[in-house]
Length: 275
Image (tube, one colour):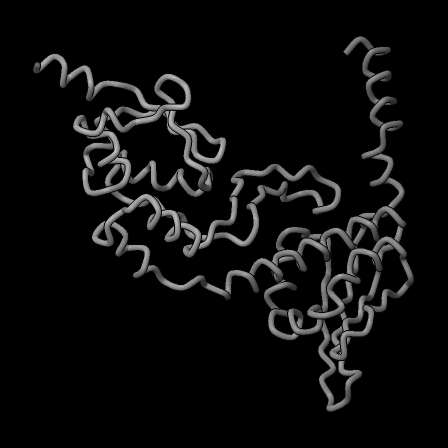
């Protein structure tokens, strides 16, 4: 009898939840006998079980949300992550956003507390285990604004890259309070396409963080001079100018030092001298 009970506890169960399969032990589920699954897999209910395939049981519920319920059975707590409004990326610091591969570090499927609580009710998880979800702090909305500021700074880096690609050492970008399209002087089409998405909030970002953005860009690029001038006024045409100036970067000798032709020449010279 004892061996029979041990065998039953060690039995593997496959839970197919909305097409997503989770494999666990019967004993993991019966640890919480006051839940739906804990009751369902009690020995006394064996005759009532209706597997779809051997030891597999299907539930027409949300398979992604069920991940957190399965974690509860395994750990005794809800490992509920801070919600994110988009996946997070690791960006190479020395290259602009549009010219680098974005490496996704963490893929976050957005799941609301409401969706989780709905599944908790279905699987009859007692409130004593779920109270932590109701006590969670609200989403920090400032994080969404911080993400937009980071995107704006990345766009300025893109603009710098396009400026160099067009052999320009100076460029001015004007953002307007009335959300008019930014003006790029001298006109560079690629730079305009980069900054246009910020017509709505570029003025406000620069108005709030002009000094911090200046310092950040100049720290990253020592040869860069950034000046941000605010023209407030009381008219809808109040604006902020961003002036970006490069020192020495486009000197012909410096360009040649970094060109393929010059590097190839140095390799050939080295081979010809036998060094």
